[in-house]
Length: 428
Ligand code: SOE
Image (tube, rainbow, N blue to C red; front, top):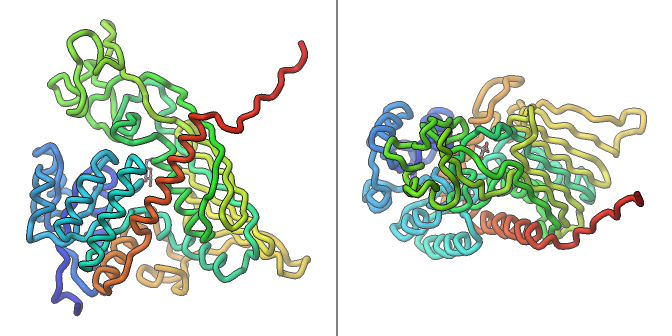
């Protein structure tokens, strides 16, 4: 494929937070990189015709539809980008792969291991025809994270002994925050665990080159019932006081107030306030793990870390050194090199903005920092390059399945209460 005389026509399903982030990447990638194929933002799809028309205009898409099957089956689409809640990933991805479309699917890959296995099998079949599939764990493409992996791979940390990972948010600490789709198991698969825990599982496996082989976990749902949403059903949703989202008494178009004073039989309609529904996912997950290379690991994913807005931090301790990545300082990497003379040892702060650093040469002169959205452009670049080169993009659907297997193990461990030993009460 020579540059610009070949196009990749993208069709994207979804237009909320991830749809906006992916749209920015598709808009930007042609301008920042000299790609083997020019990206065209051909078609965007969403359930609500008014909202998707607005999204097409606002985000820069040539056309819009409310029928994802039309998008997937169109001869004028080459790539399907899935930015929907997890309950639709498998159906859309499998249909797109069968139609010969390259697929980029947001994380986590699916809501269940069975779905993830089916998607991975479909990707393997499609690959025989040159079709490529990728799972959207974008934090791998933060330059400091890629540098972290390079340092580990070069042996600069020696033998990895500990992995310490936390992803902390606080957007649902208020019990009045409504019951959005991310808080409903049938739509999201799990709560903090699958949404943000998936990121630190993938990131630490990517950086260390080791896989999680076993876990012991606890999870908690602190607020078990919430008001039904009104208006936006995303992270900034609100309650309209009447328990209706679309003005027709139904919630997100999936549920309904059943007329007998309950919401789908799982909640209640309070005569003095908005209807409520039960939270069916974890608010927080904490687990210890062994990695197959021998490291011991601790993981924490929570939406109740008051004050932490999007705090992802990973520390890796090895026999020869330590690296620390903090998303709140995403252009930096802390590195402790234990091979330095004792008098010179200490945590150094690497500013990851040099041309030699991963991805950075495409942007600005040294010292000019980048942001959260740039990793999505890096992702788009790598996907287009892989499609053009006929190589397998990473993370693959098989990598996404591996994360799904860890999520499943954490859930099974927490539900089984396995290996949990109560501390004996002090003698009163
Ligand atoms: C919400 O927790 C969220 O939008 C995640 O779904 C994204 O994957 C993460 O990048 C930011 O926070």
